[in-house]
Image (cartoon, rainbow, N blue to C red; front, top):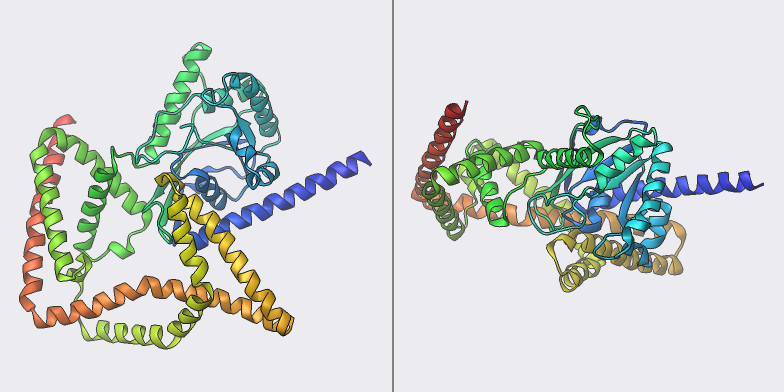
Length: 457
């Protein structure tokens, strides 16, 4: 009997874990417009795995990673999260392992011995563990110095005759905290744990810690501050817009373009800081002129041919005749939880790294409650078929509202700019001239970077 009960509990836990995995996939598809993954083949289908990820968005980081990893992920979390009543059941189902930080619990290292033993046990069962080596979530656009916990855990497992695959994961947000933004997940190759130099235990821990640090830096952007990050995004977008390819570029292309620009920026800032300042000022002035004229940079790449105009008219008619009625229905039935989420999240959020987590939790809770009340009411006055149809209409209405919100501003801008260029033909020529001036400065930067690299080689 005890064996049967244990088997039942194990099956129940497995079902709940699978439910959690599917929930993470659902919530991330709703909250983010696009999640792109590179390097998923580096995650083994079987065997012990230790995932090491950067930590920039509180609990949302773990949800995103679970959504993209097809295996159940068991997080290693600070012990304080087990004190949260709503989180504790989820953490227990996921078999999360509590870690005691020295700044929180003076004698935490004693408790961590049990935590490490639990991790070794799970590695022996071929499980996937997730750790955030930075120690805590933060608001900076660069990786913090990581702690030694991940390396000590991986090397400790080897001493127990278990060799987990230690894999770095970079979580890179296009615009953190914004609903329907994008996320690029870069998964690096497994990290080497062999002690080829026969270093002492302490030296080997430091070496592996540094290796994990470097591996995480390779899969994350790492800029000094948000001002610099925004500058890199603007320059990359400016380059891409010259050939009207920005919307076709995937997140991986943008990420590696940002990394290349960041490297060039760091080198040239020391070599010719005045040039970088001039480019920043001229780019800002160009963007300000565009804003005053109501023109977005991609409008300068559009060639208003008859076929393009016809496609735009047909698309606009489809939005107005088909999507708009559903969108109005979605606004009427789901507008309250949507705006309450925005209002309450602004009131509750203290730091930028809490935006995504708070909005996910509030949005999911408010929508579930609001929709449940409506469906139950419809069921009480009709039948189950009508209630199901009503529920499906809620989903269709919400999706239509999202489409309208996304397309409304772009559609209106395209109409306005089309007539503005038709009335003031010199406006487009002037903006194209200003853009070419910036292109010359950017081309100069590229040449200087290449010369510097040639001299270094």
